[in-house]
Length: 409
Image 1 (cartoon, rainbow, N blue to C red):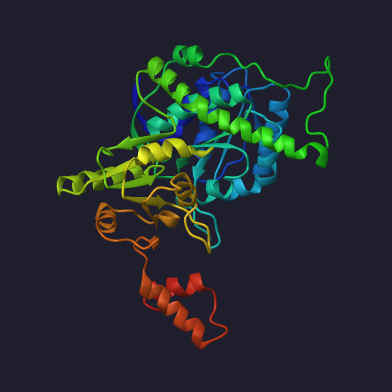
Image 2 (cartoon, helix red, strand yellow):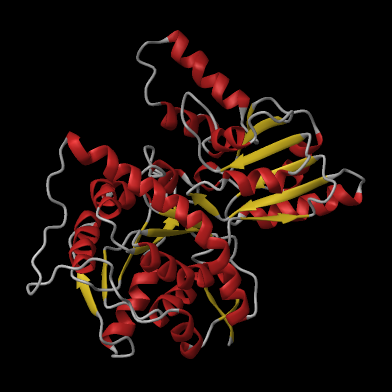
């Protein structure tokens, strides 16, 4: 059914059709509209049987999800930014216990300074937590990925994050094709847990494991992620057959045939990149785009195949490792080991800064340093460095630069 609606509401509809039995959530922008909508579905009786658990924090939300999942329930939650960091201990517990929880991360910058706008710093900071991470380019893909996420999580007994750009997608109104309940039921069978706490068959989940077996436990988690790489393409193909549209998968190419330069990115910025690439193609530049949907586990072989014979790869990222550089870029360079190709990292859109076609065209058309910060205000940074050089008590840099931007007021 085609509907014009906010991205958060569309995701809530998709999640509800997956029939979760327990939802635990704590509100934090820009995720709040999703869980508010789901709470209305539960209180109205539309989503039943389902228990909506109001908690006092994000840590409590995921902790309650862990308990509910361990007893055999289909479980969902959502968060963003500092909320995801507050869950960090529980994130590792959920994956380490092999619990198939599905969580929406409405991507938002991490402070300080405080910033509520979009980048990928939150989910990227938890890339090694053992959760599968899927990134949506559009609200339609966000709708579709949640249905696939429940199927993937429950088949492998692994938790899955579906990451969608905060505000850019969560609060954007656009047309989406919502599946019918019958379609979702046919694609996503009733949940049969691989492990469950049952008084009639006592067992321990999360017991102490010492050095004699801990390496093997972690290795099995690694093997399950490798299995996910094998399952995700088939799941995406099955979704396409059932729902009539291409969605999900590992990595998808756009105009990469005979491309000498390929831009790799993830999330909603792919739409702007594709527009810039179309214009550059029209001007004669051989350039294409590789859209990364699955970031964890990292699909090294699929990325290597998608990048083909490109002479230059530009990895555009909305987060970075301070003191090092690109996060996704490190995985891309590893995937391309042994291939004669230049890999450049472009950091863009931090804290919600607009990423324009004009800026992208300029960046892609010129030679790039190994690490470039798109549209960086060098004079603003230089002014703060001069200030710090003149006085040891120069004050907080963020506030100083805001005053400089305001003309010293």
